[in-house]
Length: 203
Image (cartoon, rainbow, N blue to C red; front, side, top):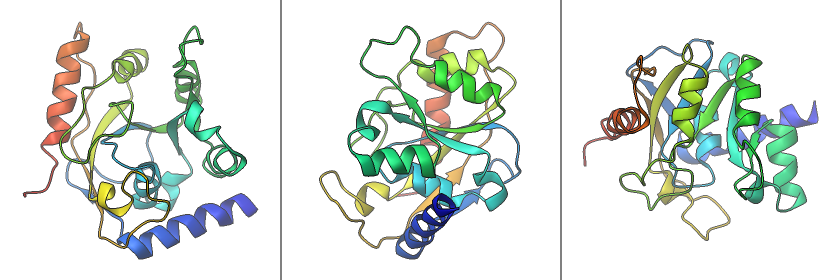
């Protein structure tokens, strides 16, 4: 019960600060299993995306996060494990299959928040995509991959800041993608990257 309150409190506070809201331009906000692929510029990104989802969808959606960052300290561990039930990925190279926890979550019917860049970008454009999302799409070919663009999050909590700045943020949800038959990694990543970039608001 306390974890639900913490999740609500963080989400409510962030919504007050940023007006976080979703723009469902390419798909409807329905509680079906999806992998939300999001640009990554702030440690608040997964919470912003989660906040923009309707309540019935939040309960089905878990963030995929870096184990080395979120396990560094009791507060981070509590937030990612107990409050948001994150799927932690080992980036150390020691794991035989670092995506195994992701595959397990998909097998359980969970939706995921996934950052295909693998690390935070500078705030404009996208860093090169890692191959992880391709392997996820190949492992679960019947699960929609939804491109999402978060606008302004890098200004809300720039790198090195400990507290968010009140600025408006929006999440634009695009048309779902699936891996095409016999589609290789590079064409899929290019297609997904283009779909995400097309969601950027006009400058």
